[in-house]
Length: 124
Image (cartoon, rainbow, N blue to C red; front, side, top):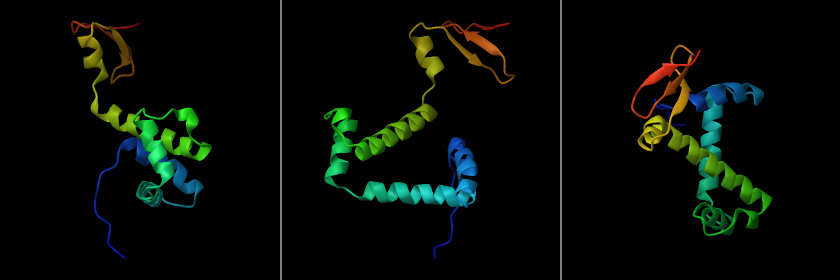
């Protein structure tokens, strides 16, 4: 059996695995391994269903035309894509560039209004 290699996982995946793992009688690491293997297996099976899911993801086929199982895979792919994108986009900067005021929590847990010009105000 190959030895494990040190790698990094997104914090949300580790947290989810720590919750789900015990439900499945697995450690968090075992749960992450399981999810990775399931994902690898699904991705490796390039079938007509997989082609239909990919066509939906590319906007070439309506989601409503998929079977329930295909829709499940499509939704999982969309969810994973959104989660990955959220890790790499600074929405506050994007929205400020469009002149939009945003509200978010700061490190102390306070609500703060962020203006497009860079000004910020703690909301009481």
